[in-house]
Image (spheres, one colour):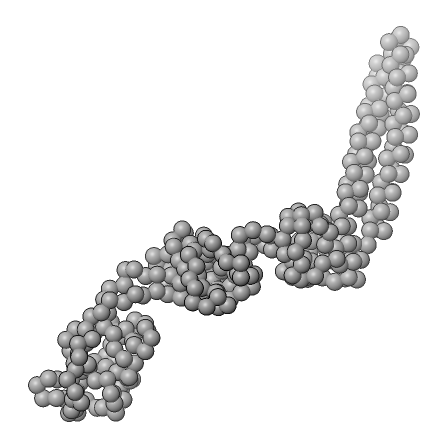
Length: 326
């Protein structure tokens, strides 16, 4: 064939996964033993729905102790208040010294502060009893259960993962060599493996500022403008990123691209004597059964496409037919 520069509709495709825009890891605000699990993976729950229950007996006892402490302190405060009122009258008639009155006033104020403190502690204990019930604040879908009934969990430990209802997006990872030219808001397309060849319009919502230390790739989140009803969480998808700046490239069949003395390239035919010479050339990608070459091969040069792996330097070849301009 005769090499020719042809336009290439180039794009990069990255594997991704359909994920929710917001996903929360839910846990109890207090530690304890799980008494009951009320949801399963895949359940759709409304805002305020109960997900799990802790054994609240210890928390209830703590609340009762706090309430008893409040009553005891209220009794002490009542005594201090009565003494303070009596000493106030005595101080007004000069039957006691000002020093004695100030001492009694200090006792009264300390008792009042202690009463406020134990009342606050009682409210905290009451709240903790309520924390034995795990509820969701938003509607969504349960995506994972990470604790079971009978298990003792710590405060804040994630026990349920919830995908909040609403926008879905596709998460993908981009190698650093392909990061150039990508930006937040750039248009892309998404295809679902379960949806055939249909391409869904989308845009880049988020692009990580730093690479993952393990994979050395950059995380990308893509928002789908109009997701179909068949788009479900966890589905495998592909993110198609167009590359409109790709110049015209040399396209040759895969059979023309071969290895010779440890280098990859093509065989060029000398039109004067019919001999061949090996030309190293780099690959810029694939398009169907063709390979795209860099500028080492020039338009108009004659390239061997059949039997390339059997040739050696300076060998004479015979044309099978007149080459076509491609």
